[in-house]
Image 1 (cartoon, rainbow over the protein chains, first blue to last red):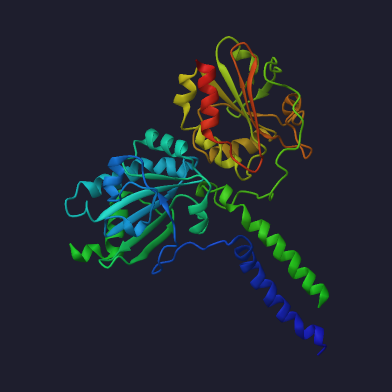
Image 2 (image 1 turned 120 degrees about the vertical axis):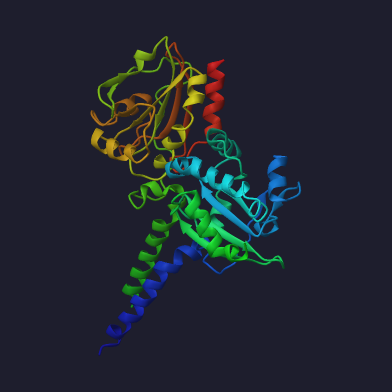
Length: 198
Length: 200
């Protein structure tokens, strides 16, 4: 066989790898966190609202990390005020928050935050006011957090379990799939292992 | 192998562009239906109007039926014209859904929003249906192609319009022009600040 012909499969393999990896290498593109992994290093701005700081158990300052939140489980919604699905689901996400806060067994164990991908503080504030969102919404104006978590579409949900030793683990990472407050809470309890502890 | 090497390099570079713009159309509502034109020249036209000019009048067909003219709001409402480049493209698809939840801000400042693209009515119908029910008229500047955009000086050389906001007061005078980088969504706070200035 001609040497050049033999090299074709190798060339195709390199091409396939380049198609997958080149964008990641060129832009430092991350993949979304997978189940069992830890979150990438993301610094979240500390909420200006004292009630939100109190809810999360973080002290005033500049930035905090998800594992610093005083909870066993943190549910993160990546949203945008410009996203029609996020707008439509906002009342139901609020109900999820109310279900958790209304249950004495859960209220200190599960916390909820939203990260506004590409949204300024003003834009996040508009969304918060429009839908009376009771939990902290964190702006990500320059998409820096969004890039760290794999430039996911919205709404995207992450479930993170924080262990007693401060270590953490992603137990849920999925685009959409929010079928209502009760089934979602049930799923979070089951997947995080909190259900068996009740 | 040199040929293969070139092919690999070319496809690799193409793949970079295919992947790089996903951040700019985030909502899953559009799923995989957004065409990515890649990074475009930020602006590609020369304005034909300026702040203080009387805005050129126009009459365009609306997606919801009938025609809308700019002059019908004269003496009644401040008008925001939001030109976006094209349906089913990044950024645009994530712009009007945001305006759709701030009707109260427009109302408070006695303003109406008119969304305009160079697409035809059936295309705009299918595209805006994905955004939910829009409270503001969406107008088609399809034929004569981009004529209104051209009169304002925001028609690009490839036939789509710039991503532009015009604020026109009740006297028909242009009070603000924001020609945005076509690749980026204009910040809502800028529009709101200008609306509030106009609404005073």
